[in-house]
Image (cartoon, rainbow, N blue to C red; front, side):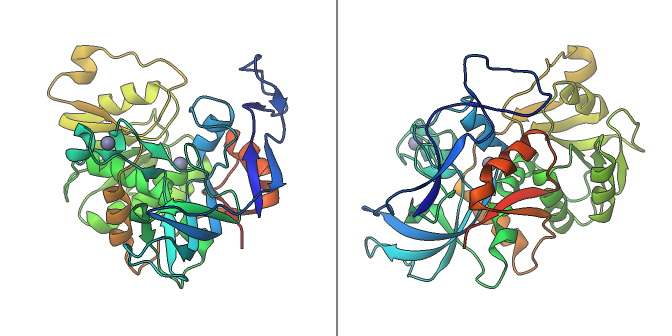
Length: 348
Ligand SMILES: [Zn+2]
Ligand SMILES: [Zn+2]
């Protein structure tokens, strides 16, 4: 089968961008498109024929060595696929079923986190396209308890972004303990937020949603997707917000969101790494019972609840489509934020 393989870490080369990792080789095409054997499912697994796979910023973190995975690895953790072969009969899955695979590939089920429903923090968390080969290929294996049934009649390219951008965004929303009528602020409006605003609109019909983004293009999309107010992060919104989600890579957003948060408000930060420092002043940003929480990984519950919320009314999903052969081009464009919505590989 054809697959895109990462053999060694590399800095993805972008013209005009200064080197950040001089110890790594500089590569325009860090993933090699090669022929490899179709994997064989073992106990608890299914073999999947992949239809589409989303490209995520985490894949850039994997290529550049900021997220630690096995090497060589086939990345890709926003998978839409058809079941080809079922190893054992303990699952209700059958050949031909359409399923999705997300970042969570396997957990131990026994540690204190797993037992408390926090499997995303499992001490033995295995990630798709990282510890286990993922979806930048024609086939992959997955654990049958960690795949999700998807509608068979929707374009797979439009479903792929739900598996990470959508699911992790949903986890962030869930962690805000949002309630209908509360005012929600979204900071940054890329792949995740453009899905999440639509989900929030459905779940919280009487809530106002404010979107803060620098990009005029993203501001326009936010208005189109139902934001009640849209502005630059430095602008003053009409009222304070009760809940906030930060999708941006800069530390300053945390300060800004907390400044705009009402007493008792909750900010959830949906970012692995901030590129600039976070400078908080206790009295100004934290006092009056404001809370800050971060999001790590994703639990099965997040994917399941998101798919339930979407139901049979598909979200408006903005995608840029690439064939598997051009995955490196998609990574380069994503690295410089030139993708509108989500980048997705159409595999077959
Ligand atoms: Zn992802
Ligand atoms: Zn565990």
